[in-house]
Image 1 (tube, rainbow, N blue to C red):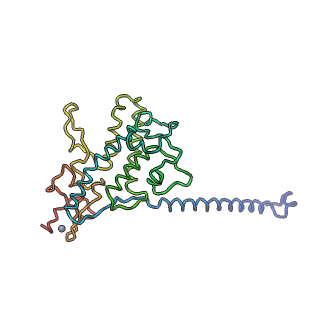
Image 2 (image 1 turned 120 degrees about the vertical axis):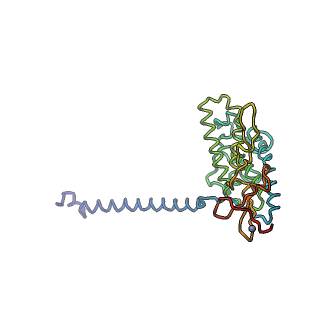
Image 3 (image 1 turned 135 degrees about the vertical axis):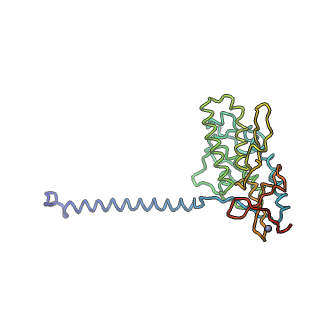
Length: 296
Ligand SMILES: [Zn+2]
């Protein structure tokens, strides 16, 4: 390139200045990239556990499995009360912070216990906060979320009591299951309500929410429900007849034979199950195997 007049006044030809400028910009970009990379590393560190394994509690005998299974089965009345009390905004929920009336949302107006009311202030939970109890840590710049975190906390607290051997208090499988289920409930109900302008579904919201949560925790199926002659079909019910060792909370507990390594899970200790129907499995394979006869 021929020298330009401007180069006469500059100590360096203009190309050099451009290169300096580019280098400067490159340094800035490099700095920004480093900052982003650090942020990314921090994020990964914080969210390292992307999969949350289902807790598993091994019991020593089949009798223990039966007793523990009965305890899980009989707990469904407690969950029923917790969910309906929250939706009706009575009993246990009255002991906690009141919902922020200014931020009521669709499910709040639908009288579902202020479900999606947005809370800007941190909510108290016994001697800690609801978000700290539920997530296992407090957000640095404060928590902002929905009033239904109280229902999540109450259910989680009950699950911790039901499985005292499970001592992890960080965000885990229980929270993952509840978060997924609560998000689905909200998405579906808000869509239906806005599409139908409410209408007759408003009378069934509590039952739909109850069934959705119980289905996530214990399973829900046709097989157990009594036939409803008015409706002309079975409404189904909690604890379905066929579980197939699915990820339900009754399958947290299991008994495994030391000799043949076959194992059996809590689902067969549920109300409608007979001991002779007990199913056995081998690790790494969900298909059923023949009964362990080591101690027969
Ligand atoms: Zn065996």
